[in-house]
Image (tube, rainbow, N blue to C red; front, side, top):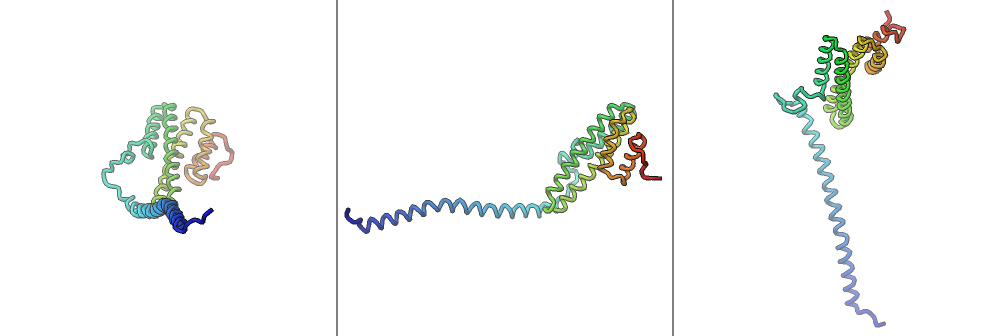
Length: 203
């Protein structure tokens, strides 16, 4: 076989180099924008957190946000309205209606408390003011849930259904702690029902 001319070898080398450059350029072009887009996004998120946090307390007068109107059911105010309707039903001695309203109020307060608790946990270590506000709202809703639970237990007593009142009272004590006022009242109900024999606080 005759030797390959030098100009042919030189042409093959140039063609191979050009192919290699053409092959690797697209990969670099794809990698570079991804790296560039990640950094500004993170910076934008941090900037957004820093700029939005101070505005949380600046709620304008006549707030027109739908859940800030006070007529939403998924709120502490919505649960309180249900409790007020339950009180009206008790006054009319309609204990079945009162029980239904109080059950609904318990569910609303519990959901609201859980949602605020989830938000507080999500913002922990990111924005302490947001986390603290949601945590306070979660505690407020949980307190109202326990109040509704106590009222529901009293309704079951009025309906001569002590077996249904006991688990509700135990839930209150577990949530509130026996040293709190509502916890003490719940335990006193258990004593009056005969479920426990040792009085607390002791006289």
